Each structure stands twice: as structure tokens, then as C-alpha cells.
Length: 385
Image (cartoon, rainbow, N blue to C red; front, side, top):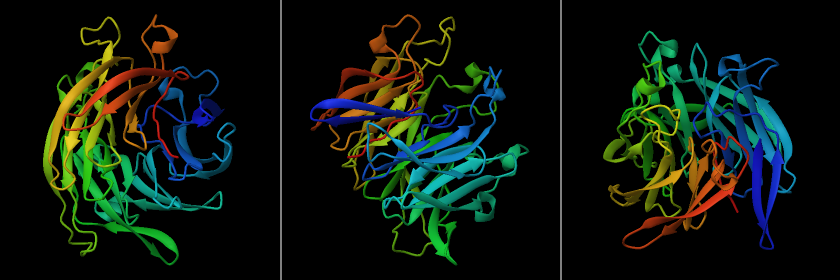
């Protein structure tokens, strides 16, 4: 379900539209165009069949949806495109005319570029990451390559792709060859911390930030897979975009710890603050010794000139499986998604958006303001005018 919140004459208006999506992907399956007129949603897993009771019963997803928000109270499905199965993440170009998607099938990992003009999708350009030099030699599927995040550089010239199974980020130049989108490497991939699940470019395009969750991806049980140590932020300084593309040199220049099980990541509009959304032990059942009622948001300061980063503090709040997060357009507030509340919680503490005021200045901080209740399963959030 897609939920759209807007404010008209001081009143919050809620619109909604059934759109198939899945929480099994990173909180990267939704993106708004800058003008706020269109939202794109990717379907990692298909809709539940009759009799389906576990995630294994769900078919592969393969759809990309475009939703028209001209009337925010009544969002309208504008178009649907068929993409490669199991899309993990998407991003929309700064001009709103292209959507980048990464998918992982049993055979290969793909980057896809889809043109979107006048309310309609064009042909899907599908590019095998292995053919772009992003390969693995492990015995696992795809040689051990899994792409979990794609982001568009503010210039619109490049995309970043997180390969969390190899602890690195690849940067690709977006071109057009014979009228079709094409990709080529922008320098070599950069090694970061363990399990770089999501990432963001800074507003000026000078750096790329990753949230390195740190999971043990070889473990088959929850306790073995989810770490009990803090996650890490990595800062990659990018090469000059005006320089040679193939020989560009990007470099990891800084890092900082956040909190346990950091998944969502956001950069403030002025580029001076970074926040991660941390699940902590909320994924564990109440009888587990690792169960925690409180998740958290970590706030960090960032220097857009040098890339220096420093942790401010963790700000706890109750809720289960918070994942996505974003600053508002002024940078005055931060919103974190909460998948669900704990059993027995009152309505105001169940699923929704946890809202924080951003206290700016020499000593920035977050102040929790409360929760906006939403339907069960809130996974990601994005904002536009």
C-alpha cells in the first residue's frame, strides 16, 4: 500500500493506493521526483498467492510502478513497466526522466535504466554488472555478487551501486549509445566496511556515504546473521566529475560507528548532518535474550569540505523494525519509519513515522516529537514539495 500525506490549508490530507512491494528489500524501493508529482515503487516479491503463508510462497516481483500525484488525495497509477525479477532498489534521476534499478536473479546481478516521459515508461535497458567488471568468484549465486542499493549523482551523470556481499561500492557513468542508455565504470570500485547495505551522495556530489550494517551473510539463523556490535558509516571522496572517467580515483577517507543494526541512511539538505535508522534488537522475539523494545536514530555531523564525520549521539524510541528515514526539505525534522509496534502497544505507538525535531547549531541534537500512525508495514519514506 502506498500512503501519501500532504498538507492543505493546515490540514493533513491522506491518500492511498494499493501498490505491490515488499519489506524483504532494503528501504530503497520508493522514490519521489523532485517536483513531487510522481512516485516510483519497485516490487521485489509478488503478491501473496492463495494459501501462501511464508515468504517462500511469494513469487518473484518484476514490476516498476509510476504513480501520478497531481491529486495527492487520490493518487493514480500512471504506468507499469516489467523489469528483471527481484528488484532490490531504485533511484530517480535529478530531472525525473530516468529510473535506475538493481536486480539480483540466480544467474546475474543487473543494473537497469528506464526512461519515463509524459507519464509513460520507455524500453527497459538491462545491463549485466559482470560485463561492467563487477564480478565475484565465490561458489554462491552470481559469483557472490548482490547489489542492494542504487543512487543517482546530483549531476545526473553517474550512479552508485552498493555490492554488500563484497563490501564495496561501484560507480558507473550513465551514457547514451545509439539512442539507448548504457553504462561504463567511473573509476574502480571502492572497498568500505562490512555489508554496505545502503548509501547516499552528498548534496554537492563530492562524497558518497554508506551505512555498513555488518551482518554475517553466511549465517542462516537470525542470531548469527544480525550483529550485536555497532554498524559503521563509510565516507568515500569522489573523483572530479570533469576528469577522465575510466581512470577516476575514488577513496574511502573517513568512517564512524553508529548503533547496532543500522539500515536506513539520510543526509540533510545542507550536507552537514547524517542520520542512520537502527533496528537494534527489535527484530528478535520477546523471549530472546537479544530482544530490545527500543530502536534508535544516530545523528552525526559531517564536513562537506573535508569529509570529516563524527557521531553526536543515539536517540532511542520504541518500535519494531524501523528501516527507512529522511530529513525534511528544510532539514528541521527527521522522519524514521516504524514497521510495527510491540504487542499490546497503544495505537499511537504502533506502525508509522517517528518524527524528530533537528536542533541545529554548534551542538546539534534530535528531539523526539512523537509518531504519525500509519498502516502496518511502513518500510520507507520520501519527501518532496
